[in-house]
Amino acid sequence: MENASFELLGQVASKQDASELVDRLIEQVQQSGDLHKLFDSKMLKKKQELGLPLSRPSSLQDVPEEFRKEVEAAYVEAAREVGAKFIEQGDLAAAWMYLQVIREPEKLVEALDALPDHIEDYERMEEILQIAMYQGVNPPKGVKIMLKGHGTCSTITALDQALPQMSQEHRGECAKLMVRSLYQDVLDSVRRHVEQKVPILEPGLSLKELLVGRDWIFEDGNYHIDVSHLNSVVRFARSIEEPAEELELACQLAQYGSKLEQSLQYEGEPPFEDFYPAHEHFLNVLIDKNRDEGLQYFRDKLEAEPDEQDKPLLAYVLVDLLIRSDKLDEAVDVSAKHLSNLNEEVSISFDELCVKAGRIDVLKQVRKEQDDLVGYAAALLRESS
Image (cartoon, rainbow, N blue to C red; front, side, top):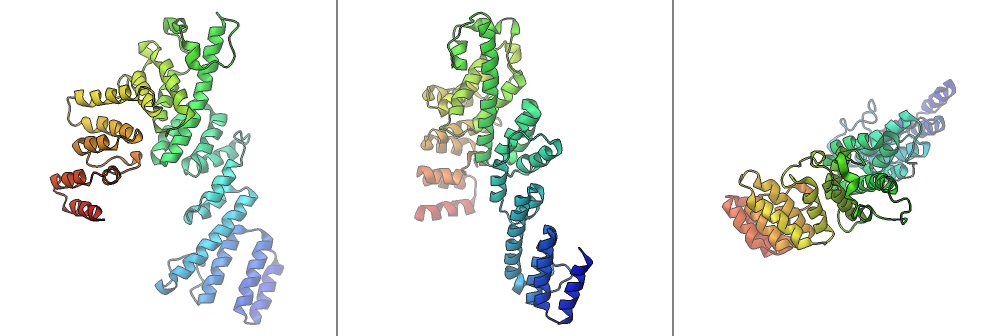
């Protein structure tokens, strides 16, 4: 800050006009372009108006309770303004410092969406990925940028770590992007292989169509994509909400995987031990293709499981599919038998499931069996309302 700025503030202060002093301070800081100081200045103004301590302008710790709401409102307004100005300057990391605190990521989400998927500057790309992917501001954009900058393998690794912290919407959107990307890679590779024997192929064939009658492309343990990538992306596809074209693409990927040599098909966790056939059934339920057959597959898995401790995991998968198939009565019955509470990834609690299905009777019975007096009372209140 130039000496003239300090001198000007000194002249204003000599007039003993505190309000004018702070206004001039804000003007000077705005002219200098120091947005961090602008935030501090805005907070200094509010504290000066209220006669509060000025030694820590941006702190809320020294604010008495009677002034807290007013100061917090000023804090939010200043953070919103400064965050927007940082976005205008392209400094998204600095913008997030302010917008994160006030829990207003929307403008930053829009700014990230406006960026190209391919960012040449490595440090810039890493900074954007930190915000979009790892800070969870815009994971789908992070996936797009990471696929372009780091490739499929690194993106899968990062996504595996980030998925549990994402919202259901973001998990689904990221899974869609991964399915489309990998599907295109497999499709291109398989087509090139088939064209070695069939030079003139009809354009626009799907992966499913290319595979029909051509099991020879899998001879001698042949494969067309990193099989660990295929395994991960098919697993990701379970997060996609119907309706979505990507579910059909994922189903085709699962069909491709089921044709691989057995040593290339990794075993999954129950009920997905038979990984690709199980995922075909799962995805078919979602796209309403042989739905009854698919649901029965998972009913049989649950029924055949000998270990009672493992049954909740299998029941969770079945309940998830039943809810997404709008078979709520059965979902309630399976949940009541095997689950005390549904995992939040299903986006509905056991209580809410019972209410949605009109089965308060089951909710009351389960809470009574659990000796949960509070839960039972809550069920009674829901029933009466």
